[in-house]
Length: 333
Image (cartoon, rainbow, N blue to C red; front, side):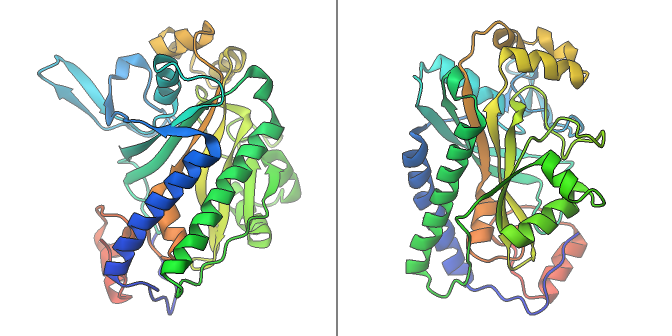
């Protein structure tokens, strides 16, 4: 549900907002590519559902699908490119230490709308080839630090253009596992735990998302066929405008054949073993990788001190949200 903080006013005009969005996307992409040795590539908007390349997310979201008469088959709008990127790295013959980044545009029709969520999702989806020896917590944390440095560096440059921006981010990352977070706040639900922890630490990486905790419940849902549930996580920043955590990225070291085999069984998704992507992965035919998605609108919203994601992206909204924003003089694009 949308809630506009009392007294909120955008720090930028509509014109400056559009120019700032352009600058953020240009500056951050350059920093991200330099930090992780990535090359920008073209990515699909739709995929063949029979390949197993589409992202199942939490398993309940319905992908947008339609028939393609000229092909004589159905197609699905991607929900993310988590699996496509790994397949692309093999096809494009990328070596260890190199990776790809692409603009991912998706429609998630079942998304609940609020200040941070829209049915339109835009991400920098990235993926990088690693060695089997780099499938470690230490390497995961090093990559997280590089991403945070790129985000904070983008904010620093942005303030040269727009000194009126009052946004402050912390480069000091607090790493904590989902189980440690549950042990710390056993009386709270996962969202409340995030709020409590990030309100104090400001920048946090919550590791180990997808598998059941000792309570019997996962911290959050995660599809079993791309992230290794022990070596993944969510990157969150404290948003001073909304007084809540803002998840900027979901990322992780990808499943090995062994962890995919285990996670498919745990998730009750053994039927996916016969899909082309999963068969190739189980057979050891795909490279070891690390990857994730960084929300473009989310990052623009955070760096520009915006109260609603509709201030930095054009989408569709319910009547209540539009009326509330109009009353608060919040301009939706």
